[in-house]
Image (cartoon, rainbow, N blue to C red; front, side, top):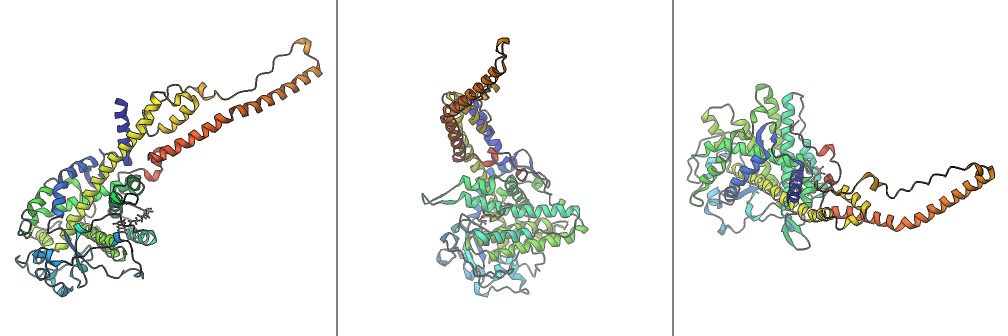
Length: 533
Ligand SMILES: Cc1cc2nc3c(=O)[nH]c(=O)nc-3n(C[C@H](O)[C@H](O)[C@H](O)COP(=O)(O)OP(=O)(O)OC[C@H]3O[C@@H](n4cnc5c(N)ncnc54)[C@H](O)[C@@H]3O)c2cc1C
């Protein structure tokens, strides 16, 4: 029993190669374990929040042209790529009806009409107007929220899951996004900012990878569910990608923590969901200021140019979403890039100002930015829940199947019959079950099958004739050759058996899902480093 506990410990420590007691990054004073605990507490409330009538709708333009390259002819034919837009307006709450929003047709964006951009003005029709406010600090492309072609979408009816979107198109999108991370100067802060930008994008990419693996279509059963192998191949085998999801969680959590005091005067259309504000308070009450220290990124005037650069590059990332041909992917890509952009706006613009200045930054947010912010946090929260679930599946797989094989070894009731084979197999399996051991593995056993030529007997004085000596040497050689041939035939079945056994062992390891990085030494690329340079 205790060896089984050891096995599960060994497997558990191996999962994603992350030490959960380490901090998530140089700018985060929180460990992986602490984030898991926070997430465990807030998950149910956050889920209820993003299912509320206020937070479950989002608006976007699904037909916008890609602004960066001439590739507007692609499309994704899978049903899973489609987005169900709101058509049955009778079932939509009154607050979201076109009359309450202002007619969608009349919502085309106008720079002068700043009231259209105001969060407060759009939040509730009975809400007081807040005067003219200029939008001057955009980290995302807000045009969609006012575009006449934009459609309203119920996010809960369009879950983020496996769509089958891939190939050259999606690779091109990802590589253009990563290319945005190209800052000019070489200051030390540049490194931190560059590292943070990369982690944000990679964390988004990994989070999408986690969702598509967690809600994956099993083509044999026709059911949706977690696919452990896919998760390991896309995310789990890359500790840095897993860590970047946690990093993003810390960034968005800090933005929520920062914004919460300035939401108190807002009315979230209580006629539809009376407790939205208390749900927000419940979620934020589990968060802490130390979860992310944004001051380390841009903290003086020298870095303001870098901040501008960061902002415009991230805005480009949100615009690249218009190049995504799979509508469902575009929807969630828009929601999440807008959510990150809103977090960055909150972290870097609600800065050194006084209380009223801070309040003004919050009041200028559109409701779609707020909706994106909470939904992005929910996506990360779901990713972390899924990662913990994948860890359980991984451990179950290793301990159930691997444990059975290991017990065969321990009891010596199968492989001991073949001493050499047992030793060989145990050495390859011992990398994933550290408690495995084969007792009789002495050096002598290793060389049992090695036969050295017998030493020639010393000659007696009477036998010293040259002819006789040559004759005997010749006979000796012939006999040795015959013995070699005979032994080869004798050993052939055994050698074939050893080769087959070794192949079966390799296939078995593959079948029970022992990942490559456990079977082989991990490459340097897979070693997670704490700093973000
Ligand atoms: C905006 C967007 C949203 C998407 N949403 C969905 C969705 O909802 N459902 C769905 O099924 N598919 C979605 N996709 C497609 C999905 O992300 C993959 O592109 C697709 O599954 C093909 O995967 P791939 O293994 O070829 O590599 P990709 O995921 O396309 O990755 C390309 C390369 O980037 C590198 N890479 C991969 N992950 C990371 C990381 N986390 N950090 C750093 N580098 C990395 C690897 O070298 C990889 O070869 C989306 C794509 C985009 C661009």
